[in-house]
Structures are given as C-alpha cells and as structure tokens.
Image (cartoon, rainbow, N blue to C red; front, side, top):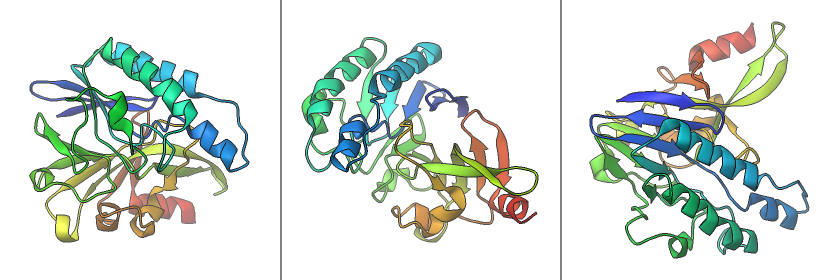
Length: 244
C-alpha cells in the first residue's frame, strides 16, 4: 500500500494492488447552518469545500472515492442546507468515480441521498487489503490485525516557533500501532476535510474520549505528519520540542 497526500482538501490517495482509493474524512457539509443555530455566523464555505473535493478527485484520478463519515453535520436531523447541497455533491463525485460512504456519527439519514450499494457498514470494510471506517465505533473483526484508515479523530498538531510560542494548529496524519484489545492492528488517522470542524492536538487524543481507537494509541511509537506529508516526529519528539 502506498499513500499519497493531497494537502489542499486534505485527502489521502491509497494505491493498492488492484485499486486507487481516494479517502476523504469529515467534510461536515451543513456545518455553517449548525454554527448559525449556535449563534456563530460565518460565511458559507461549502461551495469552496465541494470544489476542493472535486479538484482532488480530478488530480488523483481514483478507481474509487471513499468518504470516511461525517459527510453531513447536523444531528440527529438533516438541515435544509444539507438537503440542498448533498445531492449536488454526490452527483458531482459520481460523474468522476464510483462513490462509497462509511457513515459517521453525524450521518443519520444520509442513506436517502445515496444509491443502494454506496452505503457501507458503520463498523467498517476492507478494500484491497486495507481496513476503513469512520472511527466512532469498534471496528469489525475483519479489520483487526491489519492497517485501519479512519477519520473522526480530527488530528492536528500545534506548531511552535523557535522560542516555544504556539503559532497555529495544523491538520495532521497520525500513524500508530494500537494497544490493548487492538494490539496487532495499526491505525492511520486522517485529518478533517472541513475547515470549520476544528482539530484535536495529537498529544491530547489518547485522553480525548473520542472512541475506542483513540484509547488504544501507542504513545511510545505514534508518529505524525502534516497534511502535505511533512514528517513532524514521534509523540516523544513533539513533547521534547515543546519543552525546549
């Protein structure tokens, strides 16, 4: 399996033996109306987000587009914004490549927008030897013991300047062996594609409570990359850099 980072969305292209799979997590279409209901009014970026998604598909030319859950934002219902936007987004994807969706915890009711074979099980699936799921549930037995690519965790890394001042949090990829009940399984957590959905600093993920996979991060061996593929280091190296 060869991963390729597409930083603009961000997205991950997984080249296997038989298929090129473009993986995108946590698009959260409809988040702007959700923020408005909470009293936070921002200019909608959904069209720009959809354009970045289509641009990534056209750049990668995949055999399959796999959306790793939280494609929509509102829970438990579906907002007017989502009813208006999701059919157009899905049609634009289908015009370029086959589509599959692994539902996340925000995706209640998303089946109404999908064709019958496009919605995959919430506990994950294996495609060309790689396991995929959103990440809020325990993975299916078939995913254990191999590599699992997941969303849901919104990993980010805080970058600091030479005197240790925090500059900004950047979306990041987290690769780690898993411990405990998932020992022998490896996790590649991909960053959220929605710019408004926020991120969780990678060092905080083990104690974040964000599902069963986060609890099993191996803090001794976990490694972090920026969304453009720049290697940041291990958890230990990141902690040491922040103490410097």
